[in-house]
Image 1: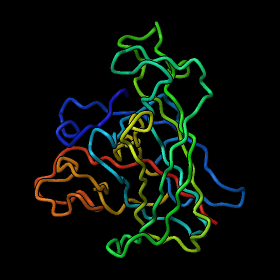
Image 2: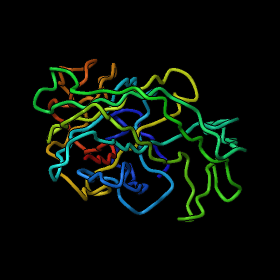
Image 3: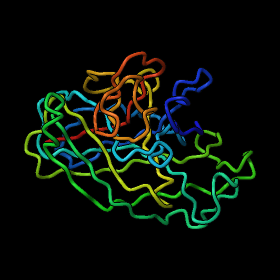
Length: 257
């Protein structure tokens, strides 16, 4: 897929197409156990994503329920979607990334909450300078300045890739947890970095369970919440009344010892 989800009005549009997602190998040490994953294994170039800059979002995540018994020192893998170019831009259809291996660093905060005690704040958090990928250059094979993925022979605007962060000081992750990511998205290239999402039908759980349908968000835009939500501007579920449409979830894998 090529699209970002800029706000709820777009997110609920009936013309929104389904997205395929990129698979990622389990992260962590050889002894680590995968206790949650909604990241499909089949690789593809890009999928729907939430733009922090466009949705006035500062923190975004989802609730997970872990399988198995491994809970110590978890490694969280998050699927991202980059719309950043080394020169040019996606909007101007002249994106150029002449050095494909070149990356840009973004200070990323990963937080873990006990789902039953969200108001108590995170049980663990870590800030790490993460290397993020630029989007590939526009291809002559594609219209509107998109890049071409040889693997699945398709054109995309954004470029998907996984990043992994180990939370080494967390001795026991809650079985029902809320995982979130946060980063500053006020200026390029980080403003062109999105968090990937999928629906249960597009990104079915392979390990663990998903106890709620809502995403969790901290945004100053009411369109990131359901109508009537009381927690606009604070981190919480998109709860409210009259919420309809697809239930998008961030794509995570959690490994633990």
